[in-house]
Figure 1 (cartoon, rainbow, N blue to C red):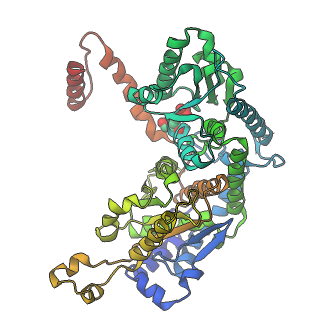
Figure 2: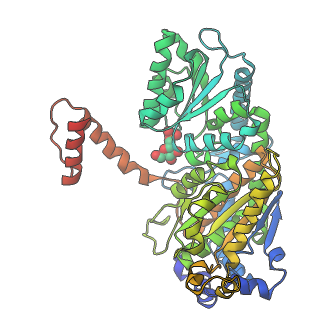
Figure 3: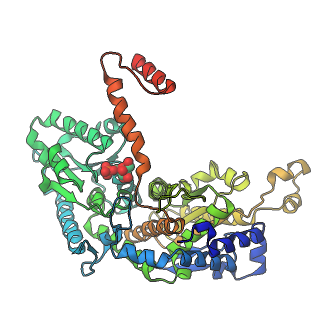
Length: 539
Ligand code: F6P
């Protein structure tokens, strides 16, 4: 395959960028009064307005050519067919199978995996119902009132994000907590007001070897047994979600109480697998299945819609435009819905662990930028914090604004005020306020430069009707596939994460050095040696 920057479509985009990089959104909107309607796509109830981007119809055409030249279509087909596109780990990439309907067939190594997916979903549903209706009792016969998910990365960020997002649909007489950090404060605070007799721990770990999760799980077991004083209690208060049955058994959890998933599900693509068990207990199996239907609808849209009407493709290509041609380093995700408070943390892992790569699929160091830095918090809080920099700073920060027409908490006038800000921000970012307009307001001359807004700051608007389980599924699948589109263009493996390994290995080397009774012989660099010595002295 021709290297990315030598492809005709890439060169065409470079030439085009040189021509239009200074055009202002004011001009683009003035030239075409219908731009706001023409540069919008509606699919699956999601209205995607990309008109407030620094693009013309020509830009979109050239970006679509880039996608064609990268063979995006056949790469999508390869993923959906279960080909082992995660080449460094020799694995298929089939999170789409997690939400496939029962009658669909998806093969890995000659085996249709869809029946296995549904068998686990059924087992989860039965268990979730038993916990929710009080049939599943703790060791002393009390019903379970608290569920604590222990996991980290993909085994935490997805469940906690989705639990927060769908809290409106959750069982309000139960408590749900999520423990991830190896800092003992996390588990201490999560358990301090809970009664072990009424608490169920879900130990979620794809590998079941992750230091943080196993350490927290052992601490949870000690906490539980301190009160219950009987090892048999573990069977009633601990279940596991994993791909690794032998490690689960080694930990002391009966594998009958294990919910399985498979190596073709990446951790950051896993919250709609059994990793979502805590979420399913919270919102109930029916809502969970509605969420899966939302994921599946977006999968089908991504697989079949023409690229110029394909939401993940457009979102991905527009991201490439800023990342690779304008040199933007970050993307802000700005949901105007308080329930989506953990969305950007979730998308950080999804995007940055997937596309934070510096070699391509052939092992060559890339000579172009790959994955962006992802960040953001829900509006309107950010407006009173960092939006200043987006409006008037020196950096170009493309933003995704995500909002809903209906609120789940109708307390007038809150939602109208929220959405007025939502619309106002994309308008202000795009069009700004010229020096003449500022002067016309009677602003003194010395203040004019400070109060001028250059505008021309790009935004996508993603507008949905209402935050339902189905809508959340669509939204998350939209971003999953956006990451896939970008990874395909950059010709990188979006499905491994070797970059997390070195720190783990070094930490394992340092643990005994911190805990040794006698002064250990340290062989690190002079900085690390001194820091360890100081810690040992003061711990
Ligand atoms: O260290 C990174 C990582 O491997 C993530 O990719 C993963 O989501 C997380 O750790 C947790 O892994 P596990 O589910 O195996 O405990």
